[in-house]
Length: 273
Image 1 (spheres, rainbow, N blue to C red):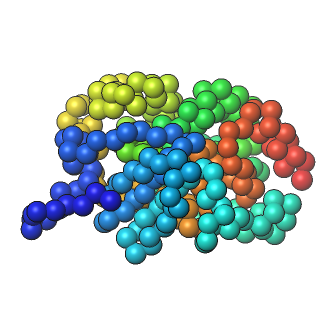
Image 2: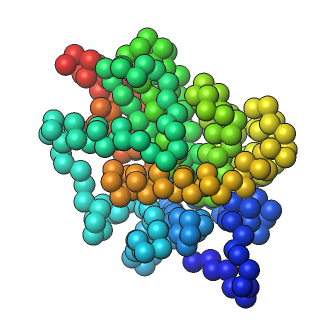
Image 3: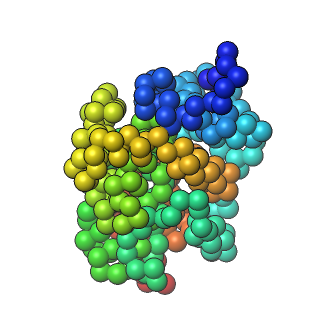
């Protein structure tokens, strides 16, 4: 864990330290990283493959540790009830719909017969693939026609993803349409963002109508970072999310990338009920 030592002064919020370059991030992706929000909601990144020492979740320091493989076998991370259990799906759908710390960003009618909630990380290649290859067809066929409501929830796997999530919300300023536009820009520039984080975020911020100063202020917002941490903790502790992307389709949990055909079949089945 990164510790602040040798000073009796009030610790500088992590968001500010990251922005000014005091903290360096080696970005990890959805298949090989562990991520923690710990020590007063400061971010710590664990870049150890699953074959390394066992993962521990330290609740007393508000840690969230993730591993795509094997996490469900750890104590306290049991799987949700079988997908075929209608009652379990209904209960899960109710949990997914619970209010979180940050306002949900969603498009599609509130009363649409199908609700899809995606947990996604801005540095996850599979999430970017879904955004670019599947989401446009999903939007055209089901969201724009009022059959599906789509909710996007941030699940950052590293510091860069957290910063990108914060920027998207600042660009949107509570406008869901602008938010999804910002998410699209961020995913399209994912590779560049990973190696030139601050420069890319500034550029995307400008495209979204922000100044360099407003981008900097956004990424120094410790309160937003804390809420992002709280929402991720809820996802891990309550919904048992341990990978990106993870989808909840009317309460059915689907972990991993989905093709349009797979999602299309699930939606068609639900619309027939």
